[in-house]
Amino acid sequence: MPIIPTPFDPDTEAVDYAALSRLVEFAAGRDFGAICLPAYASEFYKLDEDERFRVVETAITAAAGRVPVVAQSNHPAARVAAAVARRNADCGADLISFAIPRQFALTDDDLFDYCSTIMGAVKLPVLIQDFNPGGPSMSPALCARLHAAHRNFHYVKLEEPLLGHKIAAMREATQDQVGVLIGWGGMYLMELLAEGICGLMPGLAKADLQARVWRLAQAGQLDQAQDIYEVVLPLVVLSLQNLELSHQLEKRLLVARGVLDHATVRQPTYTPRPQVLEYADRLNQRVLALLDTLGLPAA
Image (cartoon, rainbow, N blue to C red; front, top):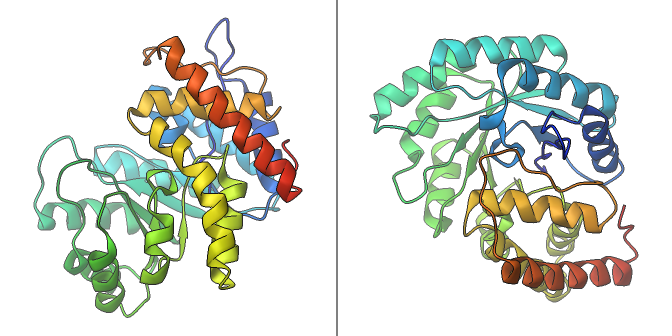
């Protein structure tokens, strides 16, 4: 389930909705379970309210029912996030996603109330993203409590290292009724396949290769899956040293593939040193060569 980035005009930094439609068209032609936006990898935190809704509406129109659209409905205030989720549902989204606010420490009771407010506002299936680098994340007990109270809680997305034990505990606590997806660019994909994850949510630029890894692994062809994974992984590792660097390199690869015309990231952003971009371009060439070897179209 790749995250669709938000393309911007290189001169004005206005959202380029025509380019966004092309990104969705590109995704709709791949074998993906769904697409998601506007999330962290979509620079959602740089978009105003109208832009966020129009991004979702544009994606739904461009997808035209060919691939489900997951509408990310983030806001640190529960009542506002619930209103955003309702509006996204009314626009025709297939699933609602939201990220748990992590600006300040909250107890499990606080998080339960926050999530309940949003899930109770919609009837669509819901995905909860828990992104809290270096800090605590959702517990199996909270996951089970939320599922017991809200049957539309279908998925949780986790983005932390050493997840194996937690995934097993969450699956047991919810009797496998809540699917666990992994984020963080798919960095931990190979090690967590055996733990029963139900999918991954990487960036769009490499998602077709990661989908191939997933399907090969599910078919028991682990060596073939590992060969592809080992080409993609260095680019994931390089990107995730800084979220803004990830935006830069994600769009740079989409330009190299011919899917985007510009790699513009809305300010403020991290400006990579030329040496970093040169290294990223070498890794991009390896990705393009792999696509050619596998018979996957670049664009």
